[in-house]
Amino acid sequence: MLTAKLLLAYLLSTANSVGLDFDTSKVDPEQAYCLAENIYYESKGEDIRGQYAVASVTLNRANDPRFPNTVCGVVKQTAVSRIGKNVVCAFSWYCESNKKGKEIPVRNKDGSINQAVVDQFQVASIVAITVLSGEVEDNTHGATHFHNPYISQPAWRREMKKTATIGNHTFYKMPNYTNKK
Image (cartoon, rainbow, N blue to C red; front, side):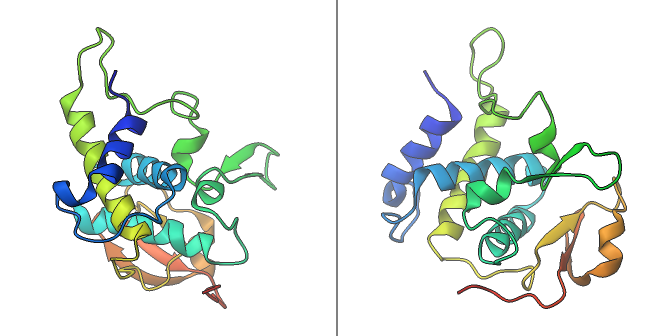
């Protein structure tokens, strides 16, 4: 049965035959899946530059000592809000009960393959694998945060330095950003 995790595993194991001409042997499948999920949910409607930007923000956070040090840790990071004491997620989709901990819906309710989702997740997976292989430069210029200004205007943006606008997202970095690498 086709699942998103199997699709990503297939892409990793057949990287050269699907056009990824670089070494993917050091890419951790679990971290790649977390990154692909984040790319899929945060930017599946964006062009490839926007998807690389979301991947870069995720990696920038993993490389910043102020955040968890793995991609999965960054994607699944939660905190208690100072206002209202409710749980908030670093990436909004992760708090949504219809997505959190659930497999990407590559199959329809009747069991048939949802080709649109498969195609979108395949692109997200290739972006994740490519970025984790070190094959792409950060097009956000060190951003650790982003938002879609058409959907939200978070208060934190006033305390950040704007680094880029790519697609529907505006990217920011925290003051005194220091990459661990």
